[in-house]
Length: 112
Length: 116
Image (cartoon, rainbow over all chains, first blue to last red):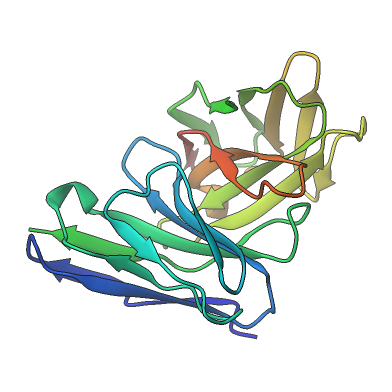
């Protein structure tokens, strides 16, 4: 099993550019989520999904868009990149809320 | 809203000794889950230990154990016989047991340094 796979691992963007961070899991987990990690802070939830076709906003959703067309994939879109979105992004999934989340290896994103 | 506080930005311990990392949380819920995650320099987020709030018994995983004090809303992590590979950021996290709420609430983390 690959677990949770995130691509790319690193990315540099210019202000105003758009891009999609990919996340895929092969564990048939219904729940998937995106977090951002900034220095000195815990992870903050951006968006999450409890199943295909269902998404909802987390704590810091502005500037990001998600969709969930399949159980396996949960891409995160930056609509118009801003320097404040420079961060490390983690995708996570779990089978139920009583079980721990599995994390991808993260994407380090820099916005110039 | 729930919050998680880790009051120790950095801790250091001599190899083979024991160290305790602190975590407190605030919630009005009675049923929830608590987690400790480890993040080494490789950036992976690795589950260390998990505790269900309805269980009075403290969770243990090999050299890692917790001291769960529900009334005090405290959830500390004890690492025994510290090893160089334990050096990492450690995060405490809270999750509601409500079926509709999968969100993890995170502390800011504690950097653990192991001295050889």
